[in-house]
Image (cartoon, helix red, strand yellow):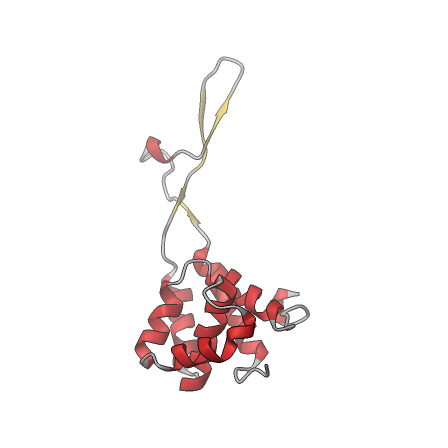
Amino acid sequence: MELETPLETICRLILRAKELDAQTVADDPHEDPEDVDDIDEDEDGEGGALSVLEDELNTGVEEEIIALLDDLAEDQLAELVALAWVGRGTYDASEWDEAFEEANGLEVDERIDELLDMPALDSHLEASLAAFDYSCEGIGQLD
């Protein structure tokens, strides 16, 4: 299978999707003691929160991903959705034509929503690239 979407673009999307999935440090870890990830206890058994993570959407990264997707042609968006489905295991690499046909049947907005709403998009795209003997190794900041 030959990619319609430049590999560099897919790798950039993977990198940004990783950033989007990353959690950010809370402003005040003492606000909600229920959210404590770890407690650092001293010899007396007293301690405090070491770190608290919240799921905060990094809107700048999300906007960059949306802009990247908006700049793609319709067939490239379908290709990305199909790649994500193959990487997720919805389709096998040998079922590429069926995956692409189904993705191509979605409206453009549905394709973008499918990608934005997919948990672990970065991992699915990486797995799919590997299934087709592509890699982001040596491309941009992913090497």
